[in-house]
Length: 487
Image (cartoon, rainbow, N blue to C red; front, side):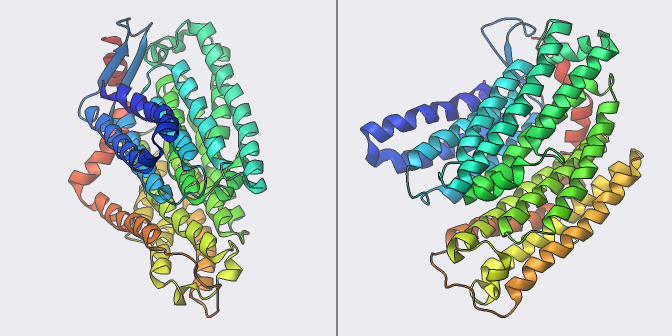
């Protein structure tokens, strides 16, 4: 039942906020804070409910094959934790800092949170698509929320490309239903192997094209740099830290359930796209002068790292992929909050205009430097650890070129992040500061401390077992299938 509440509670808040705005406006700010706290804890509770043993909820008393089911296993629980923490950080970064129409923003925010949780807990591929499109629509609106021309253009581009991706995903689902007569993912994992290979190829191609566009993987990344750089700071952090990861979960869940045994070429395609994303994202980031746009292209590359882990199809690769996903969530949420605050405070996003920032914002630059070291992969920080495990998994799977791409991409990222820091630490006079930075500094600082802690996790067997169990549970789909079909 708690998995169902993780969807219903934020959805209820999205409908309550306009009513509070109309009838009790003085309650609004405190109500939004309480709503945000409630969503955080219900999402964490849903994750805990399915960690030790898969938790199943169903609606209407129908058999699982026919009804609507919500299931939390270790894989979905892990991403629920990520969603709760990343969404909570973005919520705190935005709370109290919106100049106009904050109630509208939080209606969209809670709608996004509800639909992301829905994607993570549903056991039905069509409901997954519905939740996916609701959170995509909410993301489009959040990107364009400021109504600046830049934000509107980015939101429209995101909408157009997202709609193309949605078309391909729906096409794949339609083929699945025509071929099998079912939409339950556990049933599909058993029935898809019986359909002709040509039909399976069309289904796999449709789903992969749509999901690569939604994820923002190279070369389907065109919407991502504009959307992530044009949105307001908290939204940029949310998009890069959480929204992209929910799309990766969708790819991971469907590929493991539907294609691990029937179409192993799917994992080869994922690996190739991941490798291209690593190299393409880093090379494009190398040319950027806009600090938020640089971080956005870096996200394309980080997506590639995760896809290389997914593409191994091995438990070790899945564990490393999730470890890098949660590491990237902390690193990029912190970096976007820091960079966004700098850009808003200094009235510029051009790194050349931020010379001497260290002499005016010492602690801010120190935190930014630590996060930069983590995302580049300086040992013993978390970025190094997850990249190391990704390289080991890729090598174990025989994917030597992707493993080398991880190392080469790390070198490229060191160049462009060192270029940013060289301007921050150089002599110069940036524009005077305008606002108090401490709240944003606290959030970014907390993210940097988490990066230090996560770097220690692989060195402690009992802690690393939490991540290795995720990979083992993900590739062993029998428990997921039996939990649903036993209902």
